[in-house]
Length: 283
Length: 259
Image (cartoon, rainbow over all chains, first blue to last red; front, side):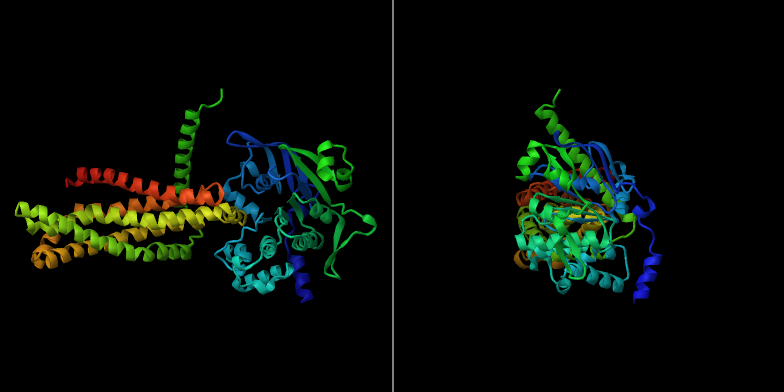
């Protein structure tokens, strides 16, 4: 078994990040967006590098989810340049975007599970669409659900799951083909603190076990700081606080306020920022 | 200079028309691309076609029956009750069969498509589908268009048949007319142009029902209230368009076939 895994690892084609070392996975340059003449985002510029987790903070309704949809081309900007895996998303045709999105996992705000499909079909959706062998689909669906500790829900429908379970299934669906980029849209929004911690643990596990680049939208500061100050312990199969009040260096922050990015930096820089809005937001 | 309210309204209308044309065109273009989603087409055909059979049968039968009842009294004034069968079959095959069947299917399915797709839009399932690499126009819209056009064609034939039978039931049982005379006049007077006219209409109407239902569903905005609004608009617009296009098609067919 171990040999098979080793052979599989050897034959696995190199990822985009391995082929393009040093290049950002996501790059926004002076992006502007408006809806019906009303400006939503102005002059947004930032980058997400390989293995990096960037947490996008900001008050509700400021345009965080919209920014996330710009990344995988679900929405096109009015102007500016968005590069994902080196490709210019804003000029791509929808048909070409489908290929690009094969390498991006998305976790939507309320899970966005297909309510007419079982958990098995939801998680295996992408593989079924790619006409992957059903036996292989079943194996990978089970693996993916095991990662989020929900392998017993295979035949359930989304309506039979709790809010937290739906988010976990959504994460399982997003990671089934091991994407190089993960987009989390308020994965803990509307959940109780215990369930939120479970979701955050999964995000940290994904970050530390697979080193997947990710962009995480949140308006809950406690969740964001938990991601920045915790690591996943594989032996205990649980997350733990970094020793000596340490900070996870690959996890950094962006803060959106009144259509613009008002902060782009590390956890340390964020908590020591002198910006009046950020000070008030963090207090 | 900022746009006036009239400018904005005009732009919105033209924008909607453009979006409708693009949705219809792209969905149809997907017919010639892989994957075809044959299983989804069959599922929709079952839901739209087989599911509509009871209402189409009832509507068709009673329309034919009441047509015979009403026309017989008028025809009796001129001593022409012998052509009741002809009048019923003409009316059913050329006009009432296609139009009433389409209106029934529109009420049942344009609303169903708009609400189903609208719910998927507001719960981000459409975005999730796109994010997972599937074109919703190919997976959701194209099968609905194909299934509606295909099934409405056969539902109309069914409606024409039971309508003629409904007229026969009234003529024979209630008006004591001769059965062979009714069926003879109903059959002998029909020409190719009449049948062609009656069968080309459901194809156009089916396209209208499915594209309008899907268009309003895919463009739903504003949560559950928006879903309700999209559903209502889909039924109203598709019904009006069916009646409007019926007039245009009838005019065209009469100019081609002379009847």
